[in-house]
Length: 138
Image (tube, rainbow, N blue to C red):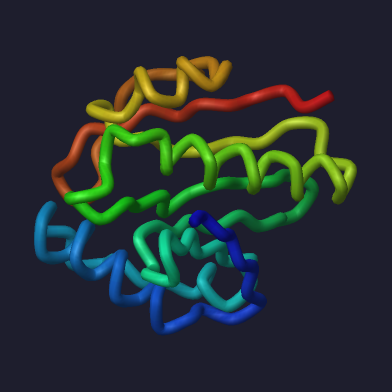
């Protein structure tokens, strides 16, 4: 059974998932930042096991989504889509009209599948190619 829980502070489950995915698997060193203190964090549980996480936040007048991570053994089962849809629904409740994200180039098609559009040129974060994307809400 799937359940998504929301947290105002960075929960231990999110730290563990992001560490496994972004630090151990992908080699990122600067995974945790000050945005973790202002973001809303979602955790996806499957049969009470935390298997995925993401965060979203408002900065100035813009809304942002990011740090979507699913444990390796649970990928390609639409769990990322579940987290993304939950975050989008929550942002709509906050009257957000547009949400931005910086996608790893390898994940661009996932976001396109969920109606995000590319904006600007490719750039690098910690040596990994990214692309800025956005979605108009409502």
